[in-house]
Image (cartoon, one colour):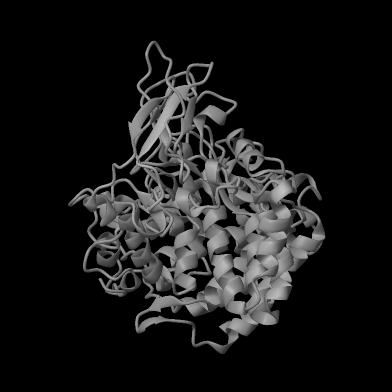
Length: 595
């Protein structure tokens, strides 16, 4: 398997030369003759460089940067990729539950699968070295690094299983005897990760507790415990196994056990007071685009990209059609919210107009672009905006903005879900209220927060509300797909979403009062749109200074592109393992799950 050999070669080079961290900085290293493991993993700066190197594969071209983050997570009942309606498109096949092992976007030996295992191999070497030579029981800084290495390995495995289901388990550095391994039942991997994260949570510090935990680009106790809570929920949830969609049969991963663990970890984070929700939803996303990295806020941990790597805005920002006053990169907009999502939000929900953007930045004239309506069929994620950045992106391929891997709002909703299952809706209510309190103006909270939540009098009603709240909170963050899978709602909700799109197209059912014409004018800055007619019932011409715009552009092809006709998404919950890795596995790897 080429990718395993690559892992050994690359990591050996990184230990015998300079150690490069994920931000691209280099640490000075002693002469090669002195760089044995006992020196590296007992010397903080060298060990830190090695641990930072665990994340370096995420920035590789076909890894998280250009394949996993842009493509995993589509399509759902809230989001779609705009390649989905293009026939015979290898990118679209990844979204419509029709990926083949030979997919030309993914079937390369340097793709995300390979890079994840490269990161795992680096983590295994660091973990072994720090355990052997780091004296982590005494040296808290080296203990922190061991906790980071355990956590990074868990991140890689969590993402592997999220995309591929059962995968080979490697928890020791590769030897000739372990070069080729079959897939391992993911239940065993989840149990190992939960144990590893329990250990890591004892080793790493809380946010801002020491110099290593002042930035969200480094692991801290709040993130480790929150990740452990997330994985507990996933491990006990519904998933596609080779014998069908079901919960785990392992008694250790029962709903009672895992929800109890998740609630305990979430409550520890919540009561610690070490992290908090941003005061407003807009503040959260402005801080993100402004690259505010200080720990102790809502973002718990971010995949750290250097300025010349990473494609979060390149992929998901509000579309810019040219180099303009806000960006030197004419990109963004490969995906967006489903057109019906804007109309599913409560009109008073402050998250709606941050999440769902109905315009793009048009072709600039003399470097100056204006916002332009696109059509009912094309919305963008307003969480990602070049125009909110503090720096001007000049790279043609990358923007360098981090990926928020987990934030505190998810911890609150995990606690709500687990408390509802274990103790009932009354126990879940305070957590759900905290999330919704930020979503509505203070004058409406008696009705929209307290009244709404207190009226959820059954476990089912509370669960349904939590499912909806996750959608309104996290659309555009690649969280929805895995949650739908673990709730056993993927196929059901995707089919329902197709019906909703059809109803919106024909202005029938719940969308009968959505206007067919919107009106716009430009504000005094001559670039910002002022729009009337997006909300239900806004059908009157607002004034002669407004121009009319047709709001019916949604075709049958687009409606039907959410998933491939004749395919049940529940039969294709995972991507296939790409053929290059099947061929290089010495007969150990095969594909399941409908492929």
